Image 1 (cartoon, helix red, strand yellow):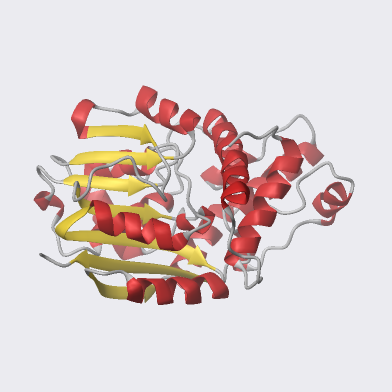
Image 2 (cartoon, rainbow, N blue to C red):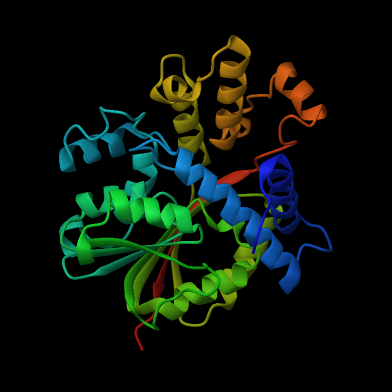
Length: 322
């Protein structure tokens, strides 16, 4: 799982992600290709963790005024400082759509798979106090960052691990969430099987991600095959996510202020374009600029760094009591 990094590693990462999210006959990775991909993934997210600004959350976000009002009632002012307020909404929805009140998490273990820099789970631990929140993330640097800045004993902590082989005991979590991470997993069948394994009987799985058409169809079939799972709901939240991305891309937004960095107009433009693509700008039809496309052709920038996502879906499942 080693990678030399640089644009070549990003291109290799995106080529492989596109491969297993697409309809290619070679979409299934063998063990060697899977290990190589995860090496690129670790390098990429280690770099992202080192560059992440405090308080920012790794997801496209969503914008729903009703949800934003609920968050402000639970955590007053949390959407007013160093944020565009859209990433928090996606995380809040992950718990809000479960048949549990925020006051019901005392003593419960909430597991996030693909916790990134840890900010989203930190936010949820404040919104639903009294629970035990655990994040599992492939990137060692992201885990070190999260534990250094955010961990609070048993209340909130992070461990390094693979979503397709979780370092957890059977039936050890009351709630599992996964927010915008599974599209990077080469074997979604292993991921969903691991969720079922670590959930306690009666526990809930809240699953949000963007999907290509092929990955959605594949996941739909896999969901039917997981023993002991009852899928309670599936909601297409694409328009809410698009609204969040538009808010984030708007002139004067917090995202623009932190992403438009550089000593020249061109560098600021390129920095924004790269970050915008990562944060879902193609999902709202925002095209890459001619300047960036020219730098891509010259090999100065990665050729691509996002998937052609066609829908954003939130599903909720329950592990049937034994």
